[in-house]
Image 1 (cartoon, rainbow, N blue to C red):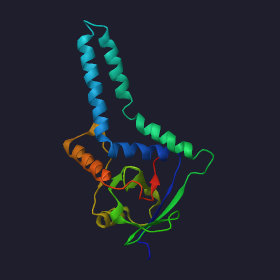
Image 2: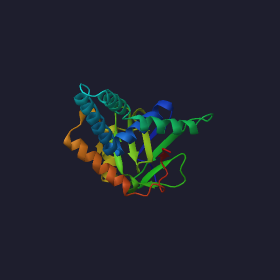
Image 3: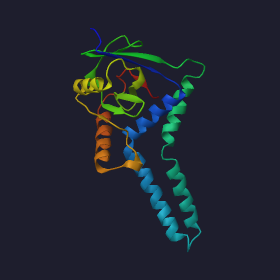
Image 4: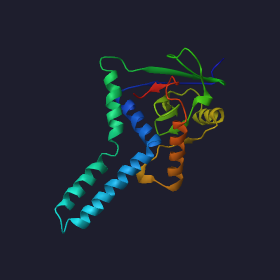
Length: 200
């Protein structure tokens, strides 16, 4: 079937790190908020106790370390993925989007739009997550066709809407509930059955 749109993705270390971070910001919001809450609690208790007990200083230090490491799991995952490419070329994926599904230069079968769990976007990339471990990452600058038409096409075919990754500094109730919904949606899917770019 003739493709409606085509696009590509030439990976490098920076884009893999970006993908890992977006994954965490999309599917691990509860964990991030839990770490932030525990960190702030330790810092608060430390402030309260520091005037009467030296242990308070250690609590503040521990809370601060936890807070600064809230995104550490994304970095660890990125390092693990990059290690797999040591001495190898990064993938250069070419996508074709037809009415019935997605094909790439590295896939032998068409992937149906019903297998997409989340549509995520930032300034440079579009992310079509099949679950928390697999995604089609698209460089917006490579898209052949109008981007608004492409986004509308994907939203129609998948029944989903594009949204931005969850960010603590711009958190509101709507974004929080949306992130929780996406996380639950991904858990309901079989993580071993999708052929996109895997994060392992």
